[in-house]
Image (cartoon, rainbow, N blue to C red):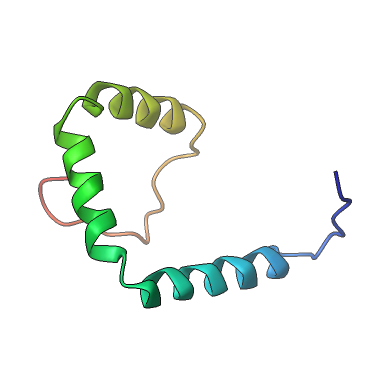
Length: 74
């Protein structure tokens, strides 16, 4: 495993890699298909497994960021 240097507040290297990869994904034209696949997973056979995974993730959370607003119904 490679040793990562401490970059202070945030990880700029990881942020750049994420932004680069996200841009490539959007430009690939696969976003619509991925969204449709995700909707089917949430509504289909994977629904219970996804809900369990969400609950596990929330157990590690420090709470909702008060600066984030969600559409009604969430």
